[in-house]
Length: 460
Image 1 (spheres, one colour):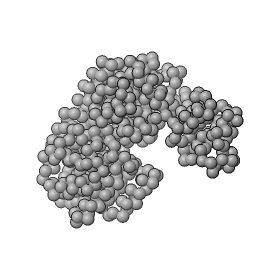
Image 2 (tube, helix red, strand yellow):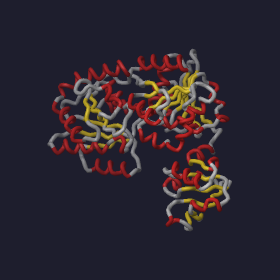
Image 3 (cartoon, rainbow, N blue to C red):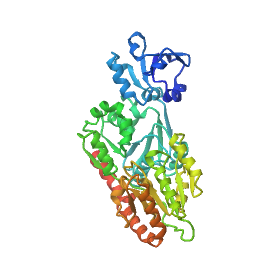
Image 4 (tube, rainbow, N blue to C red):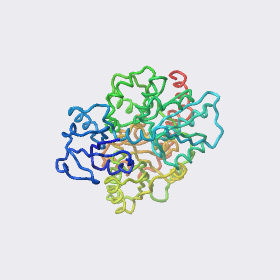
């Protein structure tokens, strides 16, 4: 096959190893005039305006500007079917390759088999929500498996112990009709997270399916390339859509106002039943999540530095996956300069449960957060939480009653909430008791199970 690669930047450099020798790159295209007629990897870079002079089979778009590139190519006379997004192209090469990881427990299938399809699995909110849904359905006597394009191997091994089986299928996000035969073994299908929406719409062409959304606006922006396909697909009566929070629902409606969407808050298991308050040493304040601007570790550090400047001492933990981004590197550099800040890195569920016992106050400093599983977990354990008012969890928090709120991106206000905690430790038990009650009423597995089983019975 003769292919053209449009885009020679970071995405190409990261993915060129996946292009086989049988796929001959006959030229690169790029909109940077300084690259035209130069060579990269011994292959010439051409002006996209020359496209009609080149014989090719496919054009692979390797850029975050793929939507604009496609419009450009169509305006130059290229055929829609010859233009392919790099994720569809590379993952499509793995079509038909299915990996199955059976659970460590005997399946219970009295009420039928459920398949939960999710985005890449790991120790993050969307994946954990899928696992908790699977766990609660097992309690209700369903046999459940989770399918995803990829996964952290440690995550699968840990979660298999709870009786859940896993399927990995690289091309799942953009799966085609002929690849869907294996899902016929399941009576009920739930598709989890926006990146899997094209999978949900493909399934909905032939059978009922539920789509469960959690995403912030930035994820919708990343899916812009498939807007027309999504708009057409979600019109199906066989597709029922739910959001994890009012904010997640609003985000969907802003993008797709013509499709009905209802609420389905998640539930989490009771994994720890006690709280330890460090009255005789520094309070431990923690932020949990992969290092990213969205999670707001910089806001957390700003507040920590302001607290230290006021002469108060606390420990500030940053827990979550390290990244190679410039943002991640800057957070680590700042943390190293502050002796009261500790970067712990990503933890397994078992490790996270142990660390919760040492955390006194959980902080959610996110700039965008439709919900917050870590805040829910902390409230379950009677912890005090300080939450950005932009987060979906803010809907469930009454300031100074079952938690504390602060204005998003306002590190000065966050530092004042931290100082309040340092000066009012005697209030922790009272606030923690109300936080736990909030969990029990809204996010317990019992409440979640009732909601989920009612939806399965009604929509599937």
